[in-house]
Length: 310
Ligand code: ATP
Image (cartoon, rainbow, N blue to C red; front, side, top):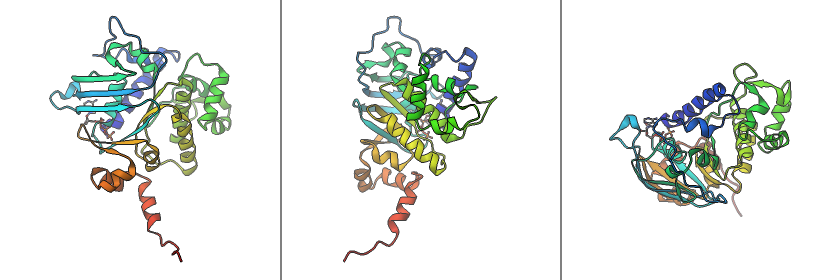
């Protein structure tokens, strides 16, 4: 729970700061002000064109408030360009921490985090974060119009691009049904959007931003069936041709992953596909039975009497 709320709080803080700073301010600039994180004096350029490659090499990390109690103990991982990797594990295992280090909200005490081969600490944080889109569990909606909220993904985007992103995110339908469509005021002083609608706004932002790396913290809360389907197909569009690292809570997402990393107590303890991990019968198999909100339905369906072959 801590992890989910940690990323959530960050996006909250970022939301408030963003309002204070004006909607044109960008995430990177705001987060560069994160205490303890310094932009290098002579930043290296990230390689062009972007590849969307991720690597952790022997990463050990303890939060500043929990010195001596590392949240990651020597994590090694490599995600190839275009690969889809799901992070799975019990609450508090370190999944969100991995995303936070990638975005360089913190620096590890040991080891190196790389994006496109570059140590993330050696590049300009803004340039680093321009290569990644974060879709949090519970995205922040700012006070403003719908169009301003989506444009937040790329402040200089022409209106046609914003509308296209909204369509691809399956958000166009509910937006056009709002009283003033895209000009409707949302957030604190306007219309309240549902969880599924907020997620689709966040997906539209990410489509608009068009970064090569997608960091996704999948929602745990159940959406109504229609919203769920729309969010799933919006995510499929977003993940296409991008490197994706997803904190996965849904079996459907896990099934589509190229690879699953099972995290426990700050370590990668198992790795494989859904089938291979299930048949190994270890931690993943236990988690699958308990955790995946849609897994139980599938199990139930599997138990239904099947027509016998003759
Ligand atoms: P969840 O599934 O609940 O989101 P998680 O796998 O994402 O969990 P993390 O949030 O990465 O887990 O947490 C890993 C460990 O680090 C936990 O022991 C957690 O209590 C701790 N932790 C997380 N965020 C902070 C923080 N900001 N300050 C101190 N400790 C933290």
